[in-house]
Image 1 (tube, one colour):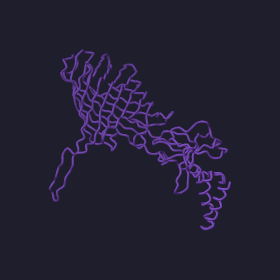
Image 2 (cartoon, rainbow, N blue to C red):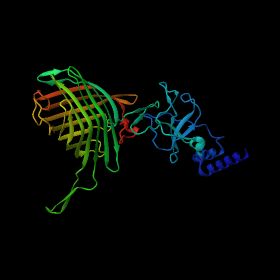
Image 3 (cartoon, rainbow, N blue to C red):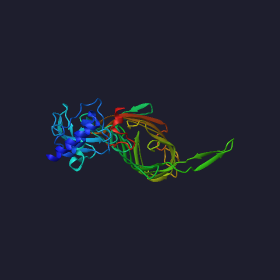
Image 4 (cartoon, rainbow, N blue to C red):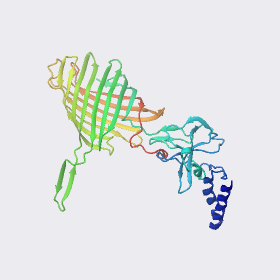
Length: 423
């Protein structure tokens, strides 16, 4: 007891020399070094409104404070600022509807250092302790009870299941159909400004009086932003000016695409063994996720109902756009033309039949179940084709409206921090 008493006496003398206003601060600076035996118990301030949020990746200490009615365990996560002598503290466990501590630990919170490994833990308890909301990763939000929820979704990286009512209009009549769809979408950034896209088992199954299906086993493409311009054009009207022209060429490939359909009494089935198209991005977003592009190239197709293989060159103008920061609004557009070449003569159809397709689709996230988004989808499509024997070439139109559940849709790579969810 002699050493602490001497230390306290020295602190009081220093306080008097500096003025009575500094007494409390100077004593508090000395007492933590005495093991806290003479320090007053830490007091957590009344909560502010709205509660401040802790920051991800900031150094966090797990402190044990005196038990309270709301947090009887006394376990808190603290992020402290030495310059302001201020700590933002949040309970280690979730709270219930009455604001009382439960046994559920916080989900998706960053790790914290136990106070037994922190040399200045006692000093931190002398800071101003202010209630806060624990940190959450980008794209995730934590409420006042400590529960975490996802508010940002990447619909270009997911596994989905969906269903829709998809009627078909042709020959002035409507066929009522239902559509089930499934697919897996993956995006992988490459080195520099490069983005790889994969689509696996994209499937559409139509159920009705005349069932049909469309299955793509694998599709790959990439978008790139070239660092060096392909052309440098210099003009000499007045002061010389240089204009850089960037041509962002890419690649689109498809493997094993099967389509089977029935029209009146005609059944048709086509299997594309493979397709290779060159792509040109007319526009893309900075992160390369959204784009408008043209593509063109050949494919090798098997008409397995008639028993021969053909070459089918095609071209398309298509767009894939994420319309908002959090990925709730998604728009797809497309116009595609194909011509069947090197096919033998088939009775009831021209020698070189053609196909033309147009489409526009919109998807909106309604809510999330266990952080997996449930969205509403709507689209319209038109098709003109002359490759079906004994079926007149004319436009047929379809529309659909339904729901889609994504089993995996992480936060976008550009997702903001949780504080932005309040904005």
